Image 1 (spheres, rainbow, N blue to C red):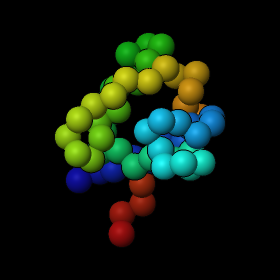
Image 2 (image 1 turned 180 degrees about the horizontal axis):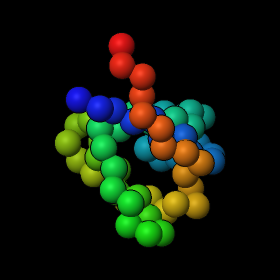
Image 3 (image 1 turned 30 degrees about the horizontal axis):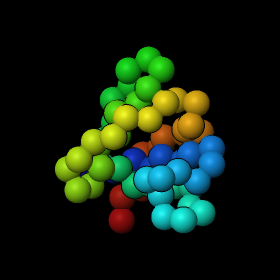
Length: 60
């Protein structure tokens, strides 16, 4: 299963404390927003202005 790393511009409520990165299981691009698929099966929408990058995680 492909996973992705979201890097936020600033720490976000979805990250732990001062962390700016989050591992997700997938995402959809809706123009001005991303819908992030969280590892627990839930999804959350975030504005693109809050996200610096989304990259595919390297397979272990």
